[in-house]
Image (cartoon, rainbow, N blue to C red):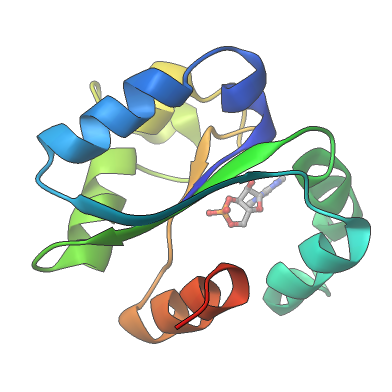
Length: 128
Ligand code: CMP
């Protein structure tokens, strides 16, 4: 998962980490870092052809983020349920994006969309 620049800036790191533990995830890796343009472009390479790609890279490099490796049963599926839809206005009440998201771009947190991508994204930030 990633706590994105808007959430870090607005002081939501603590609330989001608490929620993660309340949802029975174990946090087995945690880093506070500022993504470089190259890292953001590489992390989101799958969206390279999308019209929002340049803006997404600008946003993700606009300030520090917190990246975490989370473990629990059905982790990918459960985290997606906890964060809600990409667009915070469509996220169910109580989900992290409904609580803290500002827009479809500044949507508070990231979650891997599959177990396969979860492995790739975890390796992007953490040693084995
Ligand atoms: P995330 O789940 O991290 O994956 C891709 C990100 O691109 C997404 O969250 C948003 O931050 C951003 N994004 C997705 N769709 C749009 C969109 N239509 N317009 C702007 N940004 C978007």
